[in-house]
Image (cartoon, rainbow, N blue to C red):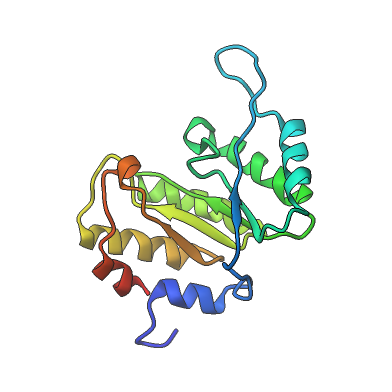
Length: 174
């Protein structure tokens, strides 16, 4: 990494997926659930059908386990299973995985699991609930970028996280 290059830019330039294009329409997928009891399991058959329906529609790629995908309603192993299902059905289309959390150690452990998958990027919001300072956001994103095998896609969604990423901080990160 060059001294003047941020960890996020370095992750993008050295990543195996650096050639991925983030142009075009990336479809944030829902996560379908079966209608069974209090904890309904993911409906992987329906998920495969959804991916098959959209994969040849001209989209650039899929965004999985973000807000639309109800990642907060999924356990870690369920999120990995959803990602594996989509990757298997995507027919070569790139996939971006959502990764949210508020405990850095746990989130980094989850990043390690994502690093085992062929992802085009990792969609990452600010940590929720704790409302970090802008300096805290810089530290958060640098820690995730340092650990990620894929480029980070910053997800500024303050109504979910309670923190807004300022333009100044976004520029510092890149």
